[in-house]
Image 1 (cartoon, rainbow, N blue to C red):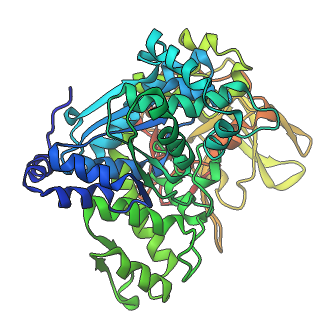
Image 2: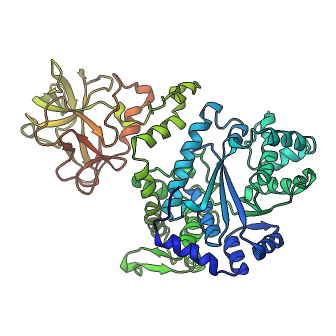
Image 3: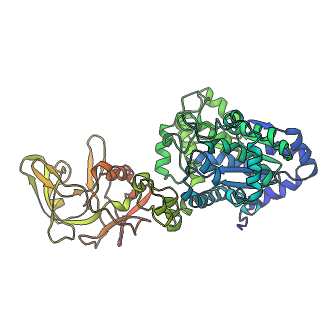
Length: 543
């Protein structure tokens, strides 16, 4: 059990005892799009605390839209509800096999760790929650018999209609997808709850439960429905659509990049995922939102009601760029504790094993369960970067803009490297200099001479463009390995396959920090002696 360490949590729990049934009902239902069975809810609240459950199928990786149900779970707890969180592993398998059977256990473990990290980041006390895995009760004799009983009552039409917005729709649907809604209905009885909470996309499953559970002799439950929050593209935020979502483990740089591309048209409050995040996550959790902006545009403004912010945005008094920048700050505050938790080698391994790179596994997930899955295409340790020493440098005989260097990278013979640095760095500055060298690219001919490696530099675009070689720590020796902080134990590929574009995918997240430190996804590039730096190019790219 995790105990509550935040005074705000204790305050919230004390508050529940002081609320009237009507106040609890208001807290339970605020920001919901629809409630089925309101009178039943009110009746229960007059007699005792409400028992409610939220289920999540353990399919794709949870993303920031999961903060929407998390903030409602915080409301439920403030209202004194007994809350159960169901990790619906069997549902994940039934939904067109979104989670292979061999990965169910790993994905449940991943979901449990990441959902708990999310709840902790918004100060929800875990000891007031009950966590249940679906297959712990859904494979029992009693439950299985009820599945058969229910299947003898529900028509194919009703089952297909109920799952239309939840179960993946394909041209030739599997029978498993028809079972999915019935199992979700039965969960209400087997978890012994008064109400089920979910998105409004679950409505048809909820109405199926209300129609058929009484036919089995079980009580009809109430249903609480969240609105569907738009993703970054304006459509539903989805685990399977990379551009629509921000992952919980995305770096601060990734968050900035994705928010920059997010749909947020001036004055448009429809299908605006950035604005919706403020409404359904920031305000319920914090009660206010600060829009940060330049003093010449009015300076920072704190909003204590979402309606004020929405009105100002609709009237174009709040610029989309200022809204995005302010949401970026709030979002990173929520994500940082989760990122820190998942820096541990155990959780990184769990993440890679639960979600193996499909191009590496080729469908063989059994090897993943045995402990594989770390060979991720974007694992920076696959790239062989070493400290090198330039032992000679001269102009390329056939190209005025290119240098021809001999670089010692700790091998019996120095490597020949061709680099386009003539316009940026003098020969004198390169001679005998320690540099960083990418050593496992496929050799390429450059104006007739084969370049056997790449000399890595920081650069800043503009007029003029500025370029500086990266600097290893003082006292470094040729051949010393360069690694990304947290990826010390990985081994580089012998040769990178050009078709896989591993270097290109790693390189896009290589940056220079404001402290002139080389980083990959906000993690430092290092040798055993310390960090990799450049002299002056803050915020530059690395290539």
